[in-house]
Length: 297
Image 1: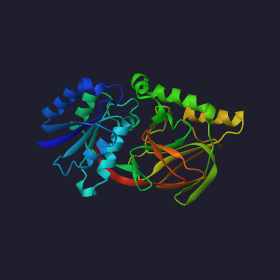
Image 2: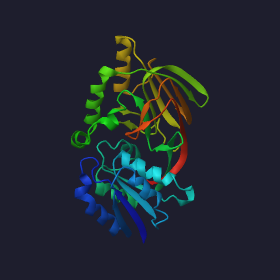
Image 3: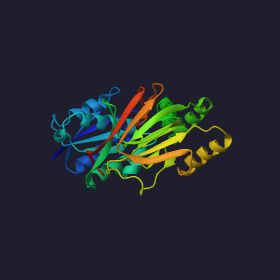
Image 4: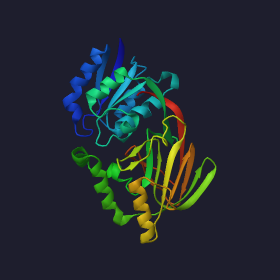
C-alpha cells in the first residue's frame, strides 16, 4: 500500500475541509492508501512538510487548501533533488482556486480525492522567481495584484472572487505607473505599465481568461501580459475592454510567450506569487522550470 501525506490548511477558503476531511480520508483509504494527515500550523509549514516527504517514507503528497498552500507544497518539493521529489496531488479548498480550474481538478474535496485515485500523472512547468522563490501558476505586479494578498481572509472565505474585485476597485484611485524594461528571451520591451502577469494558467483571479489553445502547462513557456499606463480616457477604455474581453490585441497591451524574463525597474516593486506577497527589488529574473513537478491530473 502507498503512503499519502495529506497536508491540510484548515483556514483556507470557506473552511470546507473542516467538514469534509474525514470523507477525503475515507476515499483514499478505500483505494488502498495509508493516510497521514498534517494540519499546517504556520506560514511556510506546508513547504517544510513537502520537503521532507520522501525522506519520511511517503509515496505521494496531497495538499488541501488554496493556491498559497499549493505554492508551499511545490516550493518544498523543488527544494530537494529531482530524484527525491514525490508526486503531488491537489485538493482545492481556497476561495478562488484559479489553478485548479486550469488543471481540470473538481472543486469539491471528495471529488478531487477520487480524481487523484483515478487520474494519471503529468509533469508541469513551475516558475522560479529570482533565486529564492517559486510559483505554481502566476507572478504579478501592479493594479489588482495587491488585492490577492491584501483582501481580508474572512472576505475571501465569504464571497470568493468578488473579494479580489472589491479590493482591486479600492486601489484604482491610487493607480501607480511602473517604468520598466522587460527582456524576454532576448527581445526588449520598455514603457510605463500599470500591470504585469507572468502565468501558466487559463484563469487569473476568475476575471481574465485565456483559452486552452494558448495555455500549455508543460511547454516550457509562460504567457506574459503587460498593460501600459493609459494617458487619457480613450486609452483607459481600451484597457478596460481588453481585460473584460480577455483580448490583448490592442496597442495598450503586450502579450507574448517566453521562457526567461528579466524586469529592470526604476524602484523596488512588490509582486504577488500565487497570491502571496514577495518583495521583488529593482531587478527580477523569472525562469520557467519546464516539467519540474509531477502531478496527478
